[in-house]
Length: 213
Image (cartoon, rainbow, N blue to C red; front, side):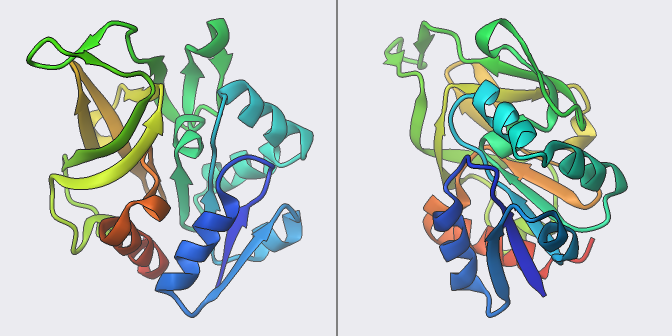
């Protein structure tokens, strides 16, 4: 087995690879070589920063078409992380509107500027730190992980899907219920950073390594 972390210049590539190496003895590579990506058993699509930059780098490295084809064919398990989750949707509100990859119907929305908790205290944007994730429905990647487990987040935008059957995890922040774990067939994607989420994050990565969709 080879697990390929797709290197298009964005995301915590080495942190993700180290976390994967921690949970498996399988070969983990960081690559932008189309032959290595196509030859890998499973793929990780990371992402960090601005959506415009992530989509732009995916196109600059000539990997967009390859990723879109892999998503369309669902030939092998793929895990999206952070902006690697968001870019799977149709559109982002960032910078006045940016078309994304369109694998999931829905919008990437920005948290409102005046976010408040139940006591009326102002909440910071970006949403940064540990937060509870509610598991909306079972999934093999949730095996051994409790619902309402804590995961680590850093984001100003969040996924808002239109198809509830594809929503596997949500997080509440202020009055927003963000869709932070989504999935369909051989693809699963999360807003949080499993590589920074201690035991629960490592367990999710271990489940991904062992996943046979």
